[in-house]
Amino acid sequence: MKDPKRLEVLEKIKRYEKEGRFNVEVEENPPYKSLKPEDVDYLNKKWFHRINTAIANKIAKQYIEKLIKKQKLIIKQVTGIEKLDSIQTGFILTCNHFNPYDNFALHITLASYLHRNKKRFYKVIREGNYSFKGLYGYFFRNCNTLPLSSNMSTMIEFTKAIETILKRNDVILIYPEQAMWWNYPKPRPLKTGAFKYAYKNNVPVVPCFITMKDTNYIGEDGFYIKEYSLHFLDPIYPNLTLNQKDGIKSLCEKNEMAWKKVYEEVYQKPLAYDEVD
Image 1 (cartoon, rainbow, N blue to C red):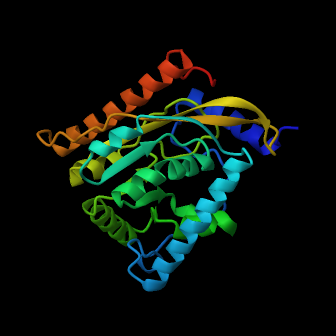
Image 2: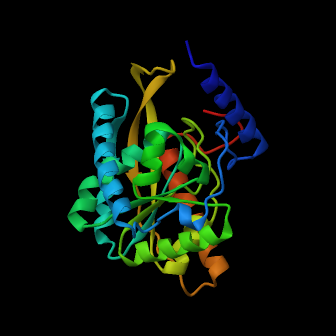
């Protein structure tokens, strides 16, 4: 039987799509506290946080490998990753957000590139994820994550960390759709935050769009497990001759067009929001 909670989420996605509420959460998330500056060591300045991160990343790698072995995470194809080799700076990686495992797919796919180029991979996460319990909460707090915050002072530290990380030529994953829509295959209208950081730090945006297809395997929730194809697209560089507002808008629009092109080519249909696939 299909998980009733998943069915509720799918109904909510269908309703929100028709209403044009593309960046609204559809999952029921537990309550959380606002993160204060002392709650987060964004740059792992404390030695014990560096140790925790090293251990957590090792455990995460083993966990992802186990998911792949058990065919709960299936990566069918990766295209365009060689485009990353031409980038001489840090960069913002954008990706569509439809499953907790899309993060894992990126993590394992980028591992060789990151190791070869001595880069770290950071992930921007929602504030509430930082307070999660269990194994996922452990990953959220320790695996090079950058939690957002409703506290202005914390966001000042967040912005400083973004600048430092990009200057070190590392990679930051940002989900510009904001909310996760479970197994939703279409690209959604984007928020501008990711593109603001790219413009202000003069680094490229690398759009990645993940397409998916049903396999013959049924997951514990009663739905077919999807196989993923990761499409890394051409880097988009900021046009600093434009003012900040127009420069950010240009980056955002080019990202949206790149994702739309992949969607239409892979699924062989025009992008339309009148109904859920």
